[in-house]
Length: 138
View 1 (cartoon, helix red, strand yellow):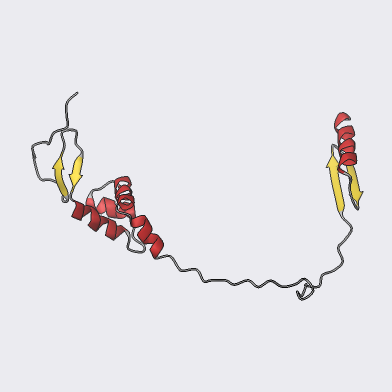
View 2 (view 1 turned 180 degrees about the vertical axis):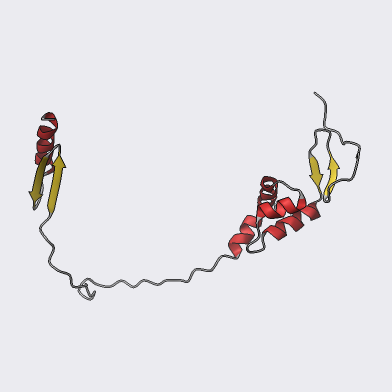
């Protein structure tokens, strides 16, 4: 295994690149990274478009945004929440909306051609028995 060493520059280096390692990895200047992160924080700016414009992969640029703590900066721009104060109110003082009397509860089940209608309070155990009987008939 060989250690990573710097390559000899064979041509023009990309802007912002300080050096290129033997494995092709580029080392970028901190000022360059910070400048790109700032560009990405502008409202409406696209991280992908900013990266493409500077020859940087968008995923790498997103990592720089996280590493530079810009995530916290974005939340600082979020709208502030207003305080809410709740007061205890007795049930007698509360004004309840008027509503029509509740209709009698109804459960209607259609199961393999059989229709079962249950009105009023339904006992779960009895409903289970009815459903079991219907299931056995199929």
